[in-house]
Image (cartoon, rainbow, N blue to C red; front, side):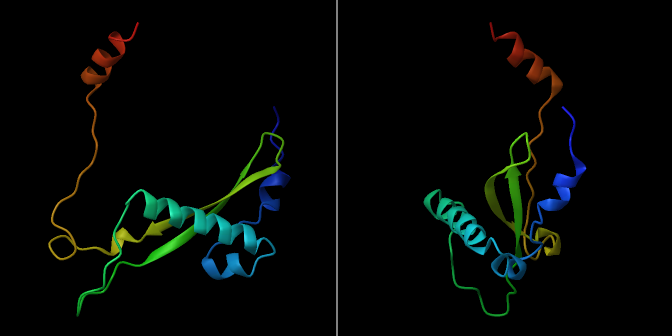
Length: 115
């Protein structure tokens, strides 16, 4: 299937919150943001707390994407809340990090057990 590059420019995804709410599709973007926040609250992703005196909270940013079908029609408006974790300093904002790492040997054993 040939991808039409013209469709990529037509998507016109907003780059920040202000552009999303002033966009012609603002209702759809607001609904996508509400859906994401509802998901966050119902699944206890994080807990909202009051900020401490003298501590600057980590800022965040909304990222907006339009999901399209194979023929380029818009199927869904998606919004994601991204936290700017690159501002954090070890020992001040966090003490440890965790990264999931899988050994190739473990993956081979897992797949060998599947019939």
